[in-house]
Amino acid sequence: MPAPDHRPAIDRLCAWFEALSPPSLAQVGDFYTADARFKDPFNEVWGLPAITRIFEHMFRNLHEPRFVVTQRIVDGAQCFLVWEFHFRFRRFDSTTEQVIHGGSHLQLAADGRVNDHCDYWDAAGELYEKLPVLGRLMRWLKRRANT
Image (cartoon, rainbow, N blue to C red; front, side):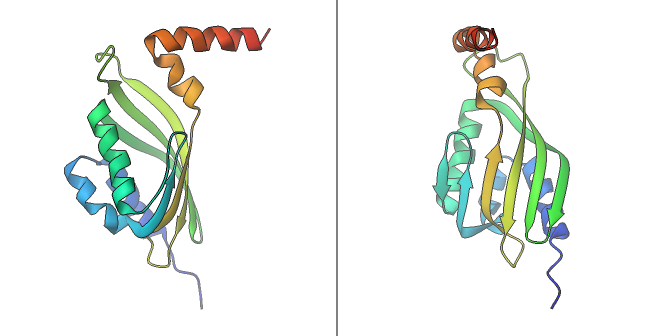
């Protein structure tokens, strides 16, 4: 029996990510299995409620967060998405848009929903260096490490 073609499910998932909003979080179960794992540089959680809380936290703490999927590779039940995450800090200079470049390795269930989601991005270079006080320290440490 041939493996299912997950490209249509990935197309729907990418469209959902790119249009993600607080109201669309109600659809998380359409895209993730009930026991899905989500891991990023700050979190490792299992299940729809915990995954939803990660996204809710994002909307509470950032102004106008949005994902732009720039590339995708689908191979059977695995997918790798390359993305840009655009946002503005709520607590700091909220006029400057920030961009984090990263990728997500997704493993899909037979029905095309994500059962494992692991994000890869450089928290030090892509986030910490952009913070007002911590950024100066991170840039200094980077210079020291390179000498």
